Amino acid sequence: MTTTTSIDWDAAGAETIAHLQAIIRFDTSNPPGNETDAARYIADAARAEGIEAEIVESAPGRGNVVARLRSPRPTARPLLLMGHTDVVGVERDAWNRDPCGGDLIDGYVWGRGALDMKSQVAAELTALLLLKRRGVALDRDVILAAFADEESGGNYGAGWMWDHRRDLLDAEYAINEGGGWPADIAGRRFYVCQTGEKGASRLRITARGPAGHASVPLDDTAMKRLGAALVALHAWQPPTIITPPVRQLLETVASALGPDGPAQVQALLANPRWDDLARLPLDDEIRLVLRATTHNTAVPTIVRGGHVINVIPSDVSVDIDGRILPGQDPEDWRRQVQEAVGPDVEVTLLSRELGISADPASPLFDAIAATMAEVAPGGVVAPYLVSGGTDAPSLPETKVYGFFPLVSTERAALYATLIHGHDERIAVEDLVVGTRFLYEVVTRFCGA
Image (cartoon, rainbow, N blue to C red; front, side, top):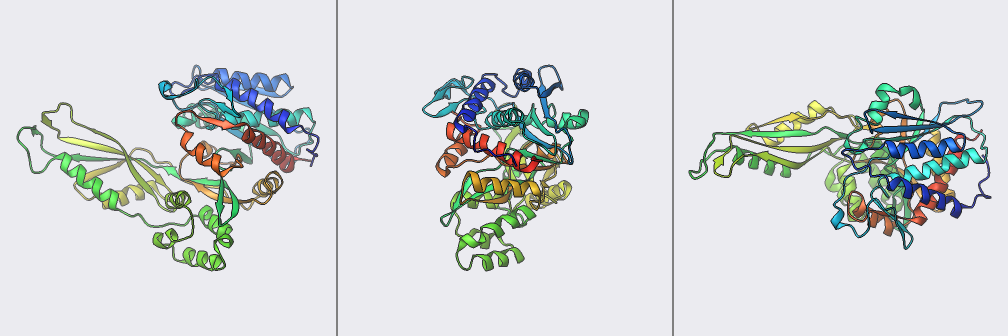
């Protein structure tokens, strides 16, 4: 492993800040995306240092960029540093700074994507450039891929690239977004590493009934049936399921739960019941995450129905953001929801995405844990399952771990309110730590 003691991490962090500001200033709100200019910036930065890079457009303006630092004598398959350059839209009037300005104010870089996830892309770019400049001996290629369209499902980004340019993404392991958040449990610091995520198997509940003039109420309508179905859905408690990532998370934190913690966790794993899990001495935020990652979930989000105010509609529907755990079947999930809401409505699947998980018993996970022990002494890296979604499922033959470390629980709590929210921003300190982590973990894992 090449030593990193001579690296000026403040200077490296300043380089990451400059890259982040530049990438933020490209408006890549999705839709429509327009990621090609950001991809071109990344490609130009890599090529200026002698690193090969290719821009691939899945559609006009929808640019994906892949840069590859080659090992002269590779003995293993590549490591992929992955991210996305598209962002969700903004309500500009609600921001205190220009969301595409990239302003550096009071130790924070402001702008849409500062957290999700142009910051990690910028740090990955700096880490790749440092590896090249310092001539780090590598036993495998290191690939940087910045995809389009993650926020809308990846059909123009990672999914499209896997289907059409898989040759550029042939990696054994990948580091992605979705982890690195700190959690303090009983005075001990843990950093969660995403080793899996739920699948978006979304649903639609449709109710039908007689139409009529709204001035003459009817006893049985589509609205009434849909309302009853939603009440039943809200009251339904799906089974508690412990997946391997959650099992390993609980086993990792068990010793911090007191002298009876390990025995208590083993009893819960043998007979998982939510009421028992909820009694673990965890804070409310962690408990919410644990509930979401031990159950398939169905949350109503969009209601459709009716066309004029004085007509009783003959059909109404509600779209459900359904998320299923790894190992669960979408059709069986649809059947469970149908049973929960009753026979008076129809439940159909809108998408059939499966949950995924990667075994943390691997050299890359070990490298992440060892690197964090140096970057943030005293912290323990724990695997966990993400309830949301990333580009990871689009790369089914790659072991993907989500990790970009944050060092402050207070800032982590702030960031949780800013991702996809107003006034998104990231602290310079976190950019410096993230850049150092990425460089050192790649050097540790890929160093010849």
